[in-house]
Image 1 (cartoon, one colour):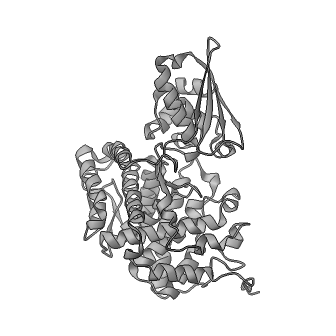
Image 2 (cartoon, one colour; image 1 turned 30 degrees about the horizontal axis):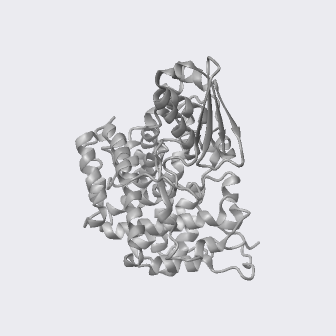
Image 3 (tube, rainbow, N blue to C red; image 1 turned 60 degrees about the horizontal axis):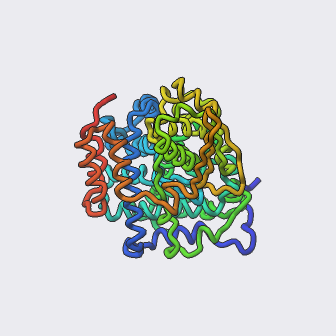
Length: 460
């Protein structure tokens, strides 16, 4: 029985039109402010990739894939090991996401850079590209994955798909296809190959497999474009067909979110950067608890109980009452609030196995509860602290740091970069890498960034 069905009347040729836009776009067509956000996206990603390089997740991944790697052409950022480009894309996607400290497209909760930058930078070490061409391709890839994500969100996400993996593979395919010069038909094939590899399940949150999703999306997206370049064909309507990506994986298909205002409405310009190393819906609670900690100081030891009023998604995504590992702690609003109150911390150091199991943190965590309120904005929280003497303190966060209303500044991105990277490659190498990352668009060879990110790395 044939799998081919006629596309319903009135459905636009989404895959073809999107492919044409990717192929025909010139770097000069991208507004300066969008290019600037693309640069911020890349700088933030480099810091996260180096920062996560020593995590046990990365150690395990390297043990598994290194024996099967081809020629050692490409860098694993922050590590001395080198792999073939496809496996380097996988590993860098893992490292950049494992701390849950990366970027976020707030409309869809996609973490855009992981799949796209990981694929592009790995390929640049075997197929050299300028920083300018790299940045153009990065922005294109982010734009494609976020638009595709918009078209199916939130229904797709609510079904249990991890949208960074499912949409990210399209972004990686678009970026690689752009930089290697695919024509329109081959770009359509690349999207078809990407659609066939679109995956990632929210069930995996709190485990090593969550960071595997952007890594595999990077690797699969790269291979989709390279297969298409070699003449490997696919459906040319993979996104909109009755048995294509959007209909199979979502109850919602909004084609205007993909095609509307292409080149004038830039989703990539809406990217945001996490101030805290965990699920983004926890950030208001951490922000509020840090402020409370600053105001009450050592009186934190007098806390009897804490109550959080949050958006329902907070408890759906991060309602783990008793996390056992640092990765699980990133999906426990109760742990995150306790760590922020006791230590003022929301950085990667707040989400280690040791701190998740620390007796004082567990004790306070067990005295924190939460209520979901549908009227509460996702970037807001109300916190009531009750002290042992019966007195109370209330804190309301209307919009948290890192939200669209309170984005991180360049200086805050720098500080975040330094905090992560210095622990892996040292302060001097971090300063050099940070300066180079900000100069990415000026470089004749973007792979200089990858090489700089590993030159001081030593085996763990």
